[in-house]
Length: 361
Ligand code: SAM
Ligand code: SF4
Image (cartoon, rainbow, N blue to C red; front, side, top):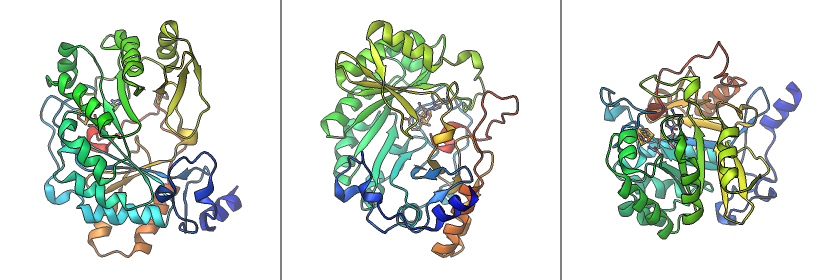
């Protein structure tokens, strides 16, 4: 095992661009011979999916993520600049084989001049996407698409205005629905909708939200509620598991599972041709064994897991004039230190200190 691991780390990835099933246009695929050292952990997992949080701030206050008030924002000087983000991203793509970048937050669209960053990252041969609450997309979607964003995930947890306002602590359902339309009109493809399902809160809308996705031609991803809420109100009982979500949808629309990939969502196909939906079953069916995700927080901390309790201070290294080799060394060490899994259901589970909005979902 150790030999296989070391060989994989040091060998050049020679046929990256020709992997079967890679549907990206040639201009967006990593170039042959680019990759020096893949980011592989001691369990043999190759990390290719980078989540970059561009801000910890948000214009919503979703109950399952942020407190109503009292969360202190990062001082501006602690945020990575666009140039710093681009440097890290380029290194990870060109030297370490990252081929997918997702911008997130907090709410990424509240970071000033976000389209400039999108344009900078779009020069890299990656699949570039973003997760957003969608509230400003009517104004922004076209600009983001023009800057090079390829696809988008938009959060929407209820179709009832009153409940939406309770959940997000903002009365903005109509703007988010309009934002979804704007993303489709801008040609972002696919547009996906993220739904955090919570028992007794919005689980009665599972079928309605699935129908919404079918009608609008967008793929809904139902996300199991995770213990990353700032209010610390999460409990086992509030989680609606993947099996229950699928069973409820299948009662209304027959479905079949689609083959699993390293993507976090388990996907299902509607048998009547109505498209797909997914379930991100982080709690009941953890997908840690195939996890290929790594994270950069808005203040430049590198995380090898969403639930990591340890962070690696990339910002200090960047600002102390470190060379690419030194940055690479930290990244490889940080990935090598990745644990087997988060163990949410185990008694040993330790919640990270930071909430979802501060880590970057
Ligand atoms: N503000 C953007 C948004 O809401 O889409 C991006 C950041 S948000 C932290 C990223 C994703 O994490 C969203 O889809 C959100 O619904 C999800 N999320 C936040 N807190 C969560 C929790 N405790 N459990 C599961 N998903 C959560
Ligand atoms: Fe903001 Fe997204 Fe968290 Fe909601 S889930 S509070 S929109 S960061």
